[in-house]
Image (cartoon, rainbow, N blue to C red; front, side, top):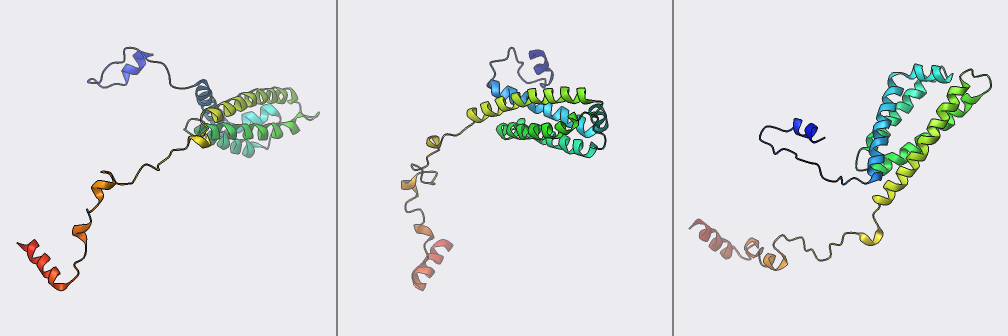
Length: 189
């Protein structure tokens, strides 16, 4: 792995001797894996909806499969960002929609009913992974109400409040025209 890391480095950059431990938790790695899976599945659904509908005996639903592909891609992108819990929960919702779409294809007159049963089993398995990942990511990245950032001790003045006191005195407007002339002549000299 370190060899691959060193390939992308410029000549003057330091070489990676060994990698350290990852800062990603298992829920983050699961979210990343599911995100890449979503991107791959979404691309397949966008580019080859006829193959999917033919395999499931659902001809005529190609537009729906393409829409599901776009949904998969958006969920996958979210899973790869800092908002991974949103992406994972959107995958869970998408899985429910997928199951609801596949159920009518289990009808008796569908010659590809066995393929639909396999697809349902696969979606059910992925749904379990999505739920586990979404719950773990939500717990890991949840902000507790008592752990909010407090700014009571900050004044908003970079050098502190005491250093700022009196700084505006030289910017005060003169009170009389004589003071204005004196101030103008002092600045000119």
